[in-house]
Image (cartoon, rainbow, N blue to C red):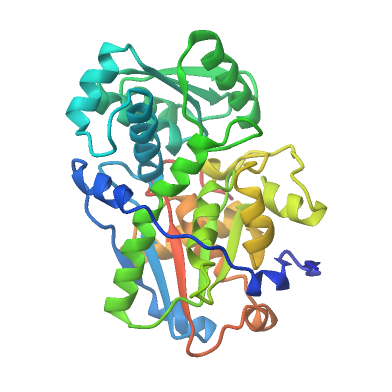
Length: 370
């Protein structure tokens, strides 16, 4: 049975033995390799952090420049949109982007999604590449610079009077009314295929990390730390690192203002929560994805949350190392630095351990916490 630590960390001891049979679809990486500007993103070593914690290596996957955008989301949305459109058009999953664009334009295909930031921009970028329209629904508390970046891709940005969860419902209703193709990174009963395709899209990142870790240190990963919004990326992390041949622990981190996963784990079921404002706006989600939940419930070893101040301090530290991430991208480092000796022992970490942090977002504007 999962137990709640007296502090902020939720531990699930049974996750240590939970496994999931999964292997990446080779078509995903082949597709990404054909996209303009694709190249593997860097894996940085943070030796001072490793020494501070008493482990062998702390490595950070830097997603600040991914296929021309400052976040990892394009990996999932590009594959999900490509696969969805190709399937609807009865085209093979080897079709070129140019031929797919021609066919999609001929059928007047349009995309619709809700976003709290990076997902919406990645959908807008794919629509731009394909020459089709995209409608992006955003919550009212999204800052103007983020809205502007989405609209700069040529998408229509629509502000809903509510939070992210309401924006999701707005997008669902708008797509149903207009016949647009709904391309969400969160799932619910009856809407599961596209979010699962997005999760498949993230497999390219893990193949990169596997190769990079092997080349750098030649040792397996003992702990992977992923940020959580609705949980789809964390689902991908669990699915990869909980395969039977691995013995990797998975830790997730949320914003203190939006701990929807930790709340669900404590309750034993998906339970929507009311969120508050946070500089980690890409993680400001109140409901765990239905498609991600079974993986997170069973496969997450530890779940924690961090404050805006802790995330901001991690941003500043990484900047001093020449690594420019935003608050969501720096949150895994903030979470790692909250671990005390008992927490490290609970995760079986010691002087020979290897930790990988997923820095999912590049630098962006935000109001610095005081």
